[in-house]
Length: 56
Image (tube, rainbow, N blue to C red; front, side, top):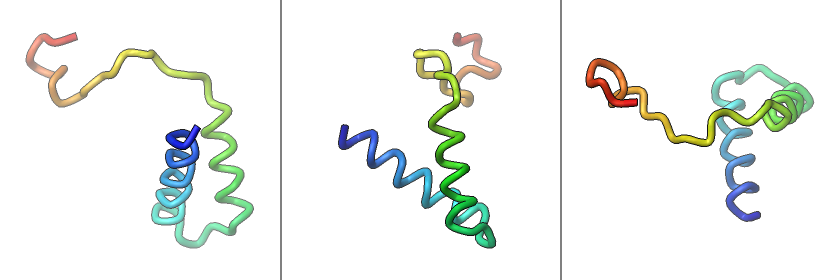
């Protein structure tokens, strides 16, 4: 649970950095939308190692 809370805090900080003019309610909407997104593939994908090296 602590890792989840940390992830949400970090995402919120990222949204503040990327959208400095956004209001608190706008940031909260972004966080809620991010949390509601369907889960992506459970596999860890490393884009730098996948491209051009035949790693999948």
